Image (cartoon, helix red, strand yellow):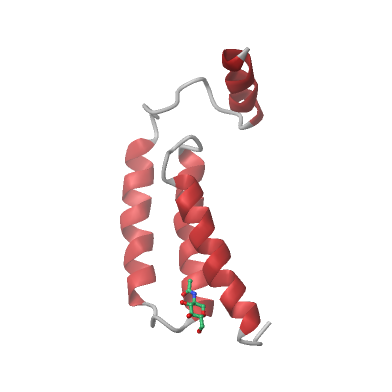
Length: 90
Ligand SMILES: *[C@@H]1O[C@H](CO)[C@@H](O)[C@H](O)[C@H]1NC(C)=O
């Protein structure tokens, strides 16, 4: 039963049943390095900049949607982007 659910999820995401050993992991790693550098360059209170930078980081995981770190990255996007709207610029 559980295996069937996992398989169904994988086909929804359009990837083959390869979880921890994603073939595109090297793309994710390279993407993360570039995009993390950009996030580091943002001022820690520039939520507009941080929101965009973390969105790019979360997008890196599209290459390996089953990556363990992807949910945490999406949570960061939510946290920073929520602050953009709260500071009133959107
Ligand atoms: C959002 O803004 C609040 C208040 O300025 C700040 O304390 C909080 O750390 C910010 N959240 C993030 C994810 O930076």
